[in-house]
Image 1 (cartoon, rainbow, N blue to C red):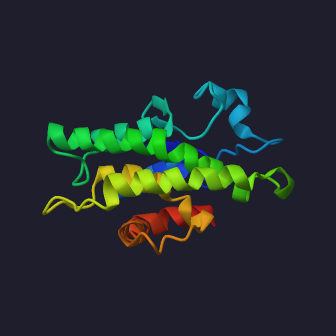
Image 2 (cartoon, rainbow, N blue to C red; image 1 turned 60 degrees about the vertical axis):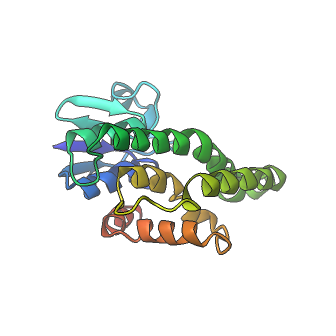
Length: 202
């Protein structure tokens, strides 16, 4: 059985969500990452992921770490209707995966750290404000303001971006000016598989 190691409020949430989407039976093994009791720094976990970060998986003896790579591996190994069926659609999936992880997520991390994670006296609102604008502009111009191809359905490209944007539920940014983005994100995060994964975070 697939084992998913990581705290459910970490990026392990993304792997748990996808396992639910793909219908993969799994065992979730909570692994803390906050000091001073970070289990991800203990020798047994470092043997799985020498970076000492979460999540990691053990899929029948095959061990992986790095969230996006894990999810792309699972999607290809346990294919279902979400997985792209042509080289072109797989290319689109990779395009949005790299865009989300390299262009969008660093901005969201800066926003999250300076508005929620850091203690109030360590937050830099000026830095957070500067990060907010390029994030919204790049995302809206590249996807939400362009209509989907006719007949296109929610798929792995959507998942790979939506799981990164999940942090917006914590940031509570005002998206009313971006109706297409807001509607797409609400629909993505209201999927039943998300609700199952959310229960582990509670």
